[in-house]
Image 1 (cartoon, helix red, strand yellow):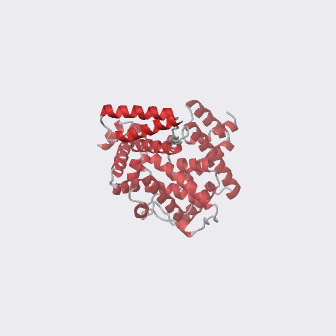
Image 2 (tube, each protein chain N blue to C red):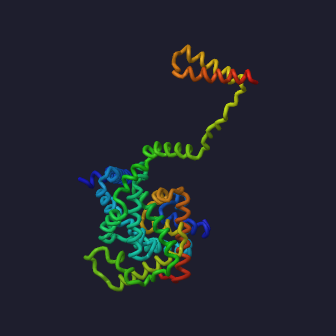
Image 3 (cartoon, each protein chain N blue to C red):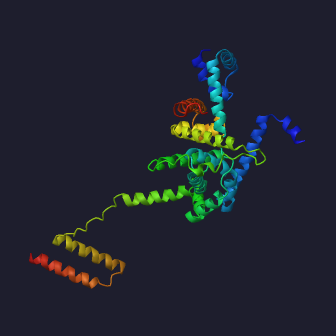
Length: 160
Length: 213
């Protein structure tokens, strides 16, 4: 093992992550190389010193401040958390999507009301048939009105 | 009796069992909070506040800012508890929030001048002797504080990715597997980042501080 390879493996060696084969090669190299042994020693001291940076205790007023933050922000947030779950949100989102689609899609326009134009003969035919129907069904109290209309139409046809 | 029992169980099994027990409790607490027992959230805060504050302090290098980051971490966790995937470990989820919150905080802070590492507040926490019974050597304490300041300044010069693995793995002592879970990256990536981060940190320390460490 050369020095470059040995230095690459210093970190894994310190973490105890070298395979048996690499471990014996590494230790053999370190025993014979003062420079790499010095590198290993420096790295080991640095890693040990890093561990001392961990703070053993948080300030005692952390929880009271968190509690105050929770109260100030919104007490019902966890409830929202529950409702944010798919089982609750899926139907809500489905309805919302349907409403959105209904609002976005173009609505069918009502058909324009076109006045029906009938010729004189067609009008007479309509009146005749309509009067017959009304007489047969005994439903129209204004059959006389239709009869008058029909007479007028017939006389107009004679005049023409 | 306990020693006998522990000796008969392989160490990694014991750790896994303790971990499982903790996780069960975490999941149960999360369920209670989601069910409306919001005061139960204090259990989770009490359980993880030391670790989260430590991570925060090692990112931002200032006790006041660390307090803000830790507080924001727990508030985010509280408000997003409904999105927590109960199949994963709660603490890895919490660490992830803390890391993202701290990095966001640092990005925002870039717009204002960096706090001095000589700030008196900086030395208020974290470096006092672990036990009051231990004989206190003022020179040793001062040397430890200076060393911590140098190291934190060097860590602050790393990129976000390298800084994160150094803080989680080397400072907080989390395993590479745990770091991979927290950052959602492959184990091999964590391993190479740890190696690169240490080499880079060593280079920075040599360049800026000499052989102080």
